[in-house]
Amino acid sequence: MTAAGALLHAGITSLPVDLFRVAEHFSVKVVDYAACADIYDITAEELYRTVSTQGFSFMDDGQFICAINAAACGKMRKRFTLAHELSHIHISLNQLRQRAISTLLNKANSTNIQFKQLLANNQRLKSKRTKLKRLKRKENLSVKQNLRYSLRRLALE
Image: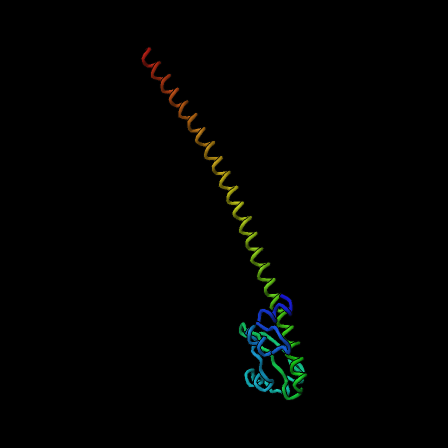
């Protein structure tokens, strides 16, 4: 899905784009550095020093989270940072979707191959059963023939 497609999917058709609405539509939780620091038991200063000065995004327990350093940037910079992080999430979602589709296709192909192998094995078994039935018929005939021959011999003696 393209960025324009994502906006349309979120129901956004006019400017300026409400990035918080886009985040909400795609279930992205947007938090300030201070809230992020509280949740993950780290200081906002440590986030600022070790992760990013403006913002970052990550996944936690199946949910994307976008942390914005509100104290370090103005309104326009916050919008840019949020848009930037949402693009990372959008790319990640597309990659996850492609991996999921690829995995499903691989499983389907694998299942299809296994199914074809089962069919081939079944055909081989049917062929062997047919051959065994023919042999048994022949064997039964020869047993019957031997019996008749033996009975004839006994009758003649």
